Image (cartoon, rainbow, N blue to C red; front, side, top):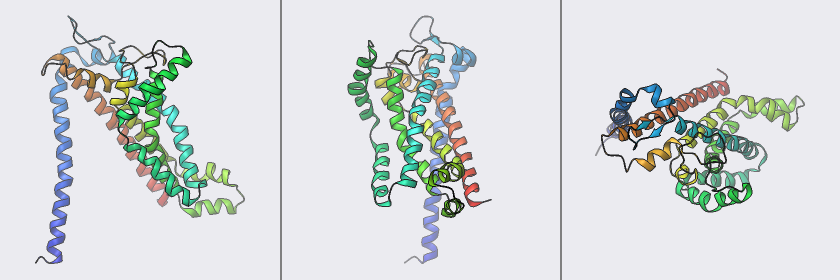
Length: 295
């Protein structure tokens, strides 16, 4: 029989193994990404790859400019945040500050369950219901547009924003609220001038992670964005974000070809964007912890 010290040591070693395994897996992913994608930057140049709008990988000569794809991803993500942030933050305020506890225990888990819905379900909803509805409303040739993708991604980002923002608001010490009310402020003034400023870093974290969720989504935008590699000058026209380009073309690109490398190059850009989002989210989270703890 093992004594408790031996058991504790075994558990620590197991946890250490899993911790290092995650680092090794991430390192492996980064190595594969750069090994397969970096050659395209030397072939066409980083400037042309990022700022040329000629995405014609199967033409002769081929074009590997992802500017329209990058712009499509950015516009769709910003549009999704315009939809998700007001609804998400308002919902978080209502759940944490207004909704009775017995209803909060039902509403919040229900919203969080939406994050577990497969993205293909959202895609089908966008294709069969939202797309035709927008097509009829705006008299469009197709309902699969940037606006459709914005709305669907905004809905998909809501659970992340609501859950994390609600946690941030709830984490504000109760004595902050009580002190404000004791000084004569009403509930609205307390929320706007005390609780929200205190929880602002945590809310920013929720928004940044929601943006990361939106910009990295693949299946939904593949199904509802329209698939046209055009500059998104009009949100009522089809676009083709970077994620949907990888999903649509990777199966047709010969392994080791320039087209194959260009798709991995797009993956590198996506990786760097989401890495930046996560870094800013971590910085905001650390700032929120210091603010709440009074350091």
